[in-house]
Image 1 (tube, rainbow, N blue to C red):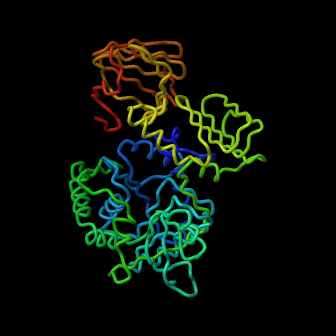
Image 2 (cartoon, one colour):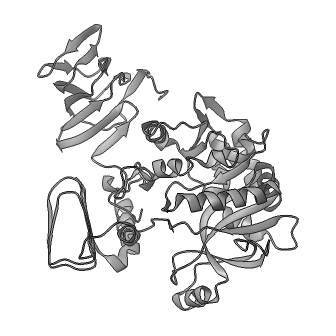
Image 3 (tube, rainbow, N blue to C red):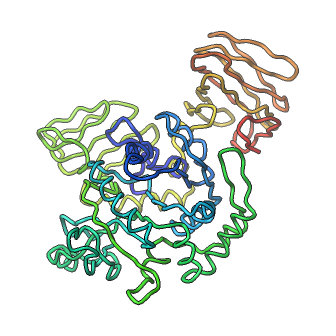
Length: 466
């Protein structure tokens, strides 16, 4: 949550774009393009929170990618259980798995491909490989890898892992960088499915048992795979590094190696990192959106909904959204988490959702709200429809502003053109559909004593929502 207010619980940074036309998830997928020319590559598998299932599918479709399967975690349990489920669900084929977090940026894709090819050859031989980033500064926000002897004198890009090192203080980080024997831990890994499963069995038997039960008792729903909820909740939460990689010593039956990745890598973990990544003007400013900056230097300004004017500032991050504005010194952006912790403490919606919320049929945006009323803009994609539903505690009034709406209200079905409307009484089954080829836009006015999203009873739904 260090990229709040753009990143929210229901719209995390993987779905955001930071100065690029594609989201971080889309860039992660596009990074694989062309790799199949040098190594065998299957259709990718995705693992995400259940709340993000339609977002991840839509972002892939927008760039003409598809997933073989999307595993839906009922709760986050960090990277080790996620990788374990991926390995268990592909165990029959026993492929080499490349684990890529979808919140990294890599500028030099050919160099990335080169490192992946080298790592894949080692993984095929039974090595568990971590990709290491050669540090260019004494960074205290990353874990480090101490490299051991090179695996091949002719190609020192790959080496044994001597040990993993916790995030150091600045003085120790300076020593690591000066020695030339340490890498940043990228969080990307590569190994055979069977090798990972055997390692988890030995080093994390409780995690292995929980993931195995979650997979065996899980259910497939078209593209989605839902692990058994209770089994997965019983799984310990841990990262790949801590759960397994750090426990593999040189005397172990397992072989742990690091392959250098020199490809312009960044994990975009803070607003200062976003500033570093983006092209800057002659004053070292990054200006995105409707922005006017005067006598301002080394500042990141992002406007999403209105004009932002900044005068006489330096070393700031300013991010504006429809419902929140962040202003922070560029050297203190790690402290943004203090704000999101405070929002969580007070159950503020600004931590969880934007005013615009994405749904599999399109999106809705809250325009205004008050005592016993709420106004939203619904955008329905061509060929999509909302569930057949009713509300116990609110009525709704729909006004079409763009497109043609097919409205079901009780037993009546009608077509509404722009500037036509329909009233939906409470306790009445209703549905909104877009049968056309252009987007449908509807202004919805809700009235009632309770307007929460949980006041929905669904009878039919194209997207399998209960």
